[in-house]
Image: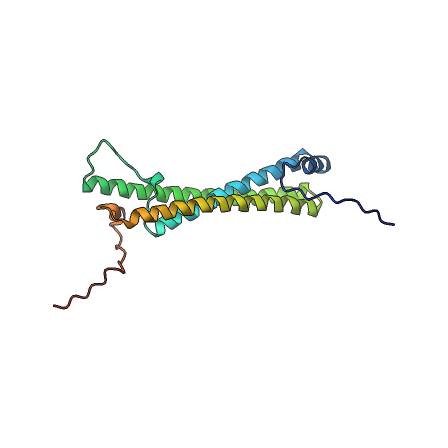
Length: 189
């Protein structure tokens, strides 16, 4: 005769006291620490994924976010000064994009190493899957939140840049300017 126990709901967080106690008692403090570190790396990965996507999008459409724009209030804004500031703003943005790509790769490697370590520590596959799913859900929530904010920032940037300023495109003057589809002129003289 089978006894029916009331099933406890699955934990939705690594901070769930019962789940944390069970992990600690079954596999030791190292397993709980590794699980929390895995969670932290997942959140970091979400941040780097979002920054790489945002900066790549900006670079592709030749926009420079306010956070990467260099300004100098003490120098008169001549065409030459503006060109220098814009070119170096673009270089700064590219360097930040490279840094974020590098960190994203490092965090991905750390996640792989930590999962390998957790597979050795946590012998029960169900517990390992539960840890992974909790972390994955939190990672996706964080990524969605960040993407919403960065997409709003990108739309705001697009609106700002649609109103052309005199020296806006000078940072990209070494490249061919984009063709304006609205100004298709047919001169027939």
